[in-house]
Image (cartoon, rainbow, N blue to C red; front, side, top):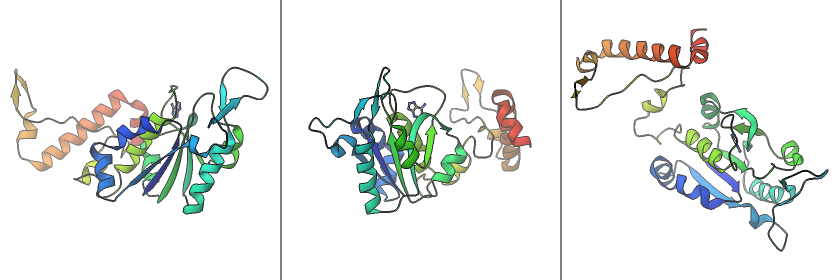
Length: 228
Ligand code: ADE
């Protein structure tokens, strides 16, 4: 899979992609992440990428021209499955969306700033709009990093133990059960006996019960989906 990210702050995204799982996914050749500085596609002398809003009002708007130039250049190189705009008024990200996107070949992510992008970008160039939650970030970069991470970890071979992505919280509308590691006894806070019993069937049943209980208590909305 290849992800092209269009941003005015590429340096903000270099960190998250150069460590741990995302770094390894790229080294193994399972994922390619390319950062594109939007200013490189501006025709202006000052490399500006924004302008005043028609009709007035506070805040600048990202111009269509550099964005169109960058997207057109990328599209001239290969076909893209989706051109995604990260925005607080997009569809709220969930595991199902990440699962679907992890099956794609090529994605473009556009990070917004200021008061957003010229509406014509959304009308004519964007195929999907995603929010990572009901709060406003300073720009789309951190949202793009979250989305990229959630997609790439699902690509087969990226995680060492492939089953661990399948047993993540949300994969089956249930939260994951609690986990423990050594020491079994610490300050009299003991690991549940059943996990030390070696009885795999009983452990599986216990984990499922814990998942159900946790989901019912913490996320009744998810529990309702699960039990339907
Ligand atoms: N840009 C600013 N806030 C955002 C959010 N919550 N999700 C996606 N992109 C954003």
